[in-house]
Image (tube, rainbow, N blue to C red; front, side):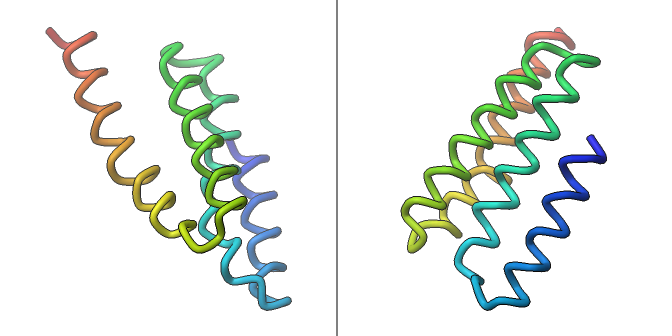
Length: 93
């Protein structure tokens, strides 16, 4: 997970430096999604799906920059809650 997260972090610092603040939130979703997709090889298969959802939300937020923060909140909030409930009922019950 470290390579996509570190790469994304450096890119986001560059975006801040150049004033592209609107792309910060969507890019965090894209690189976090890439890290999750890679981690899915070593954990549950559902982690890959979570990664793809995060990437999709990040790309959607990059295309519609005015909704980037909404996509970010949905990705890191709502999607994680739904994913957590799903994993709990699938593997813990």
